[in-house]
Amino acid sequence: MDLYLCIMAKKNNVWILAIEIFFVEIIVFLGLWLWNEQVAKVFTFIIPLVCGAILLIAVISELLERTKISRLYFIGMLISVLTPLLVAFFYLWLNDKPFSFF
Image (cartoon, rainbow, N blue to C red):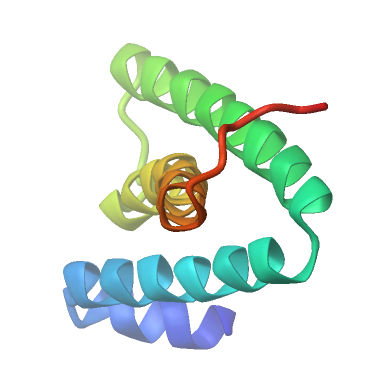
């Protein structure tokens, strides 16, 4: 997988790879919501927080000192923050359920 990411990033197809990451995350999180709602709620709460914190630290460090981190990293992290939330709202909207941890 890492070799695939390197080849795709070198070809400058960052947006194609970002769309692929987005769809894979949609499939994984939708499967998780269909399998077990309680586990999906926990992952929907934890993953955006962790990825958001890492993204914030990465952006701050990038602003302080320019590095050679590709744009794909930042896009992928942003996708990892937004996708679980979008899938959760979509799933709960389709099932007409309120979001609660109880």
